[in-house]
Length: 88
Image (tube, rainbow, N blue to C red; front, side, top):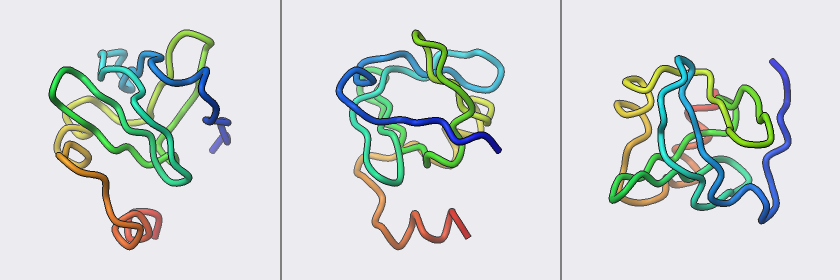
């Protein structure tokens, strides 16, 4: 897996796309463990380990949109312990 550097204010509000190229929203915030993606009132907290690449315009994740919705759509950020379970 390729490590993509995801940090800095310049990444905020960049578009995020799923594995199949579907829009997920825009980056709202970045933490050590995940990126928060906002699409209207919907929030996704996607672990950084699922990030594939950044092409200067869009950030791509390694999962299809339906799987991201099922696994990472939530109203509040995950706890650190939850993120650790995902990594393991």
